[in-house]
Length: 277
Image (cartoon, rainbow, N blue to C red; front, top):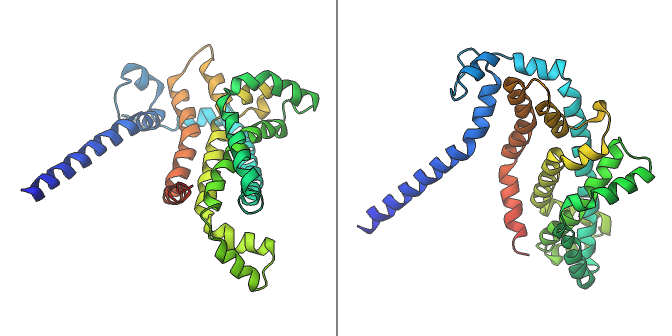
């Protein structure tokens, strides 16, 4: 009787999770499928799931006519640049906090995370003034600098938890074998915390890829516009086309989803290891 009840509960749980997954994934699936529909088909029957006629016209128009490929390139430059610098700076900073300044580091990490108490829009005017004084308006560097101010504090706070899971004994053993501090860090410590670094990198990349406010404020030219801002510009056109919007939305969302799915296991492992902080 107990075994039957357990089996029923397990079946109901899986059923609930399956239904929840379908509900969560449905908007994304509907957007992707709608991107392959013709304009008339979307307007006449928007609730139809599968397109009657599969067409790439919406993607062709968005990529070639609206030059969305340039916007994708801009977002990749900014997001990858932000991610790379964040991982280097926060990795070195978090390791230094854990191994060399543990007491001061605990206070410092708490101060760093308090920066997230303030909405980003409150800093829009100060950042615009500072970036303008350095003549970095309408540049990749200016946008990356702003993104770093938000991503580095959180990344350091997150990576401190991962570095704390590394036993000091393996570092001491490597030093006895003749390794210097840099070799210990790169060849011993980094491989151990690789899942945490991966999780932090993905979080940083997705935030930079999807960021809209500062991309709108600090970028003026169409040629350097990020993809999230370009998507908003498409929405504000005089003649709104749902097919073009669905294709553009697919190009914005799909890369992040695919990237996340490819390294989902490493992210889960990294977050689990860092949770012992």
